[in-house]
Image (cartoon, rainbow, N blue to C red):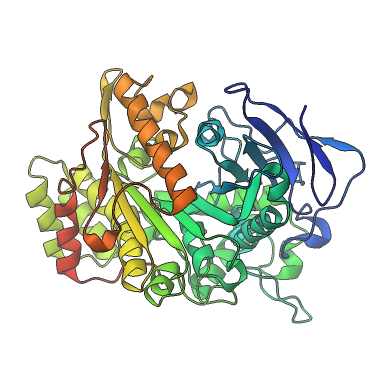
Length: 501
């Protein structure tokens, strides 16, 4: 096993089974367990240790109810959840660029142990890769009222965990062959919005110079909505919505209560926007540390010094429909109600009908909702950053496939195994429509190279968005930038602000 010394103690990993030229180290603590006296508090430093710590197994995942294929679930006694993993092709002194990955999962599920986040392929392109766990659900993003003595717990504890991990990288990554001055932070879905938040937060300034955001989600909370969610979850848990009521409540109880609150929204068609996608947690904008949401902050130039690479998929929301995690809208009456609940004008829906003349009602709904939550939000994030003077690159993933008797769309999450180069892992075959063909392997190579080049030089291989360039990711390598631009026109014509603050 390869031994490396960190500030807290020595660690030992193993050679990657995918490539013996890559060393992987798993489950390195970057902060103390966030429970007991540290519950609902900012992360604290991890304790040091004597001897050599065996880092050949992933650390425990954050409290959650999800069970994902090929990934460990949460064991309800686990507390040492703030750990990270490293893939490195070299040793100290190499000073390679570093990519730090933040997983998605609607802020309530997921972990760094998912097989599609293996860093070996990116390592082969000359990067040191770091993936991490952070607090999810109420532990990470629930608003906790002040104590009886007026003491406050910070909001956005999950983001503070991510910042603590980035500080650990700054202080330790050189021992693993990484360059602390060339760090790129990357994420997808809620992980991408986390990245966007970090790019505009003063507490994260200087910890990274580049950022990659795939399918950033339009889902920040206001302080008022976060407080209402706390009241709902506390009521479902049968405890007072106070610091004194929440701290003694077991994490499992709050996970279960959060699931019940989300399920009530899912079952109630009159419950407003949350009925369609009952994700009840997200970064709280308008509080200390995050005074405005990332879209507004980027437009004001808060992230101007960070180079940004943005991607979204062409058919984001069809995945959520396929796995049954969102409401179905199958009648014109329900479609009109959906538009009303989200403040969407009639001309926007009619423009989508013209672009999709043969689409079912549910497909129209999925197209509009996917762009509202992901596609248009991601594109505006890129453009706002560019207009404020930040260097920005934009891309869209449109690859689809007929697999195992049914079509697999260019949907949410399908792009990530290509960027990580993990398309051959069986756990992702549902996302991509079965084992990859030769053209898929070539696409994965191009996308992995683009990430590596961006992390190394800031240039992913196509011009910035200010030139009008948008890279289209498909099995055909040509850049056909016009195929999906038409779906942006209805949003521009509507002149709407998006939902996020």
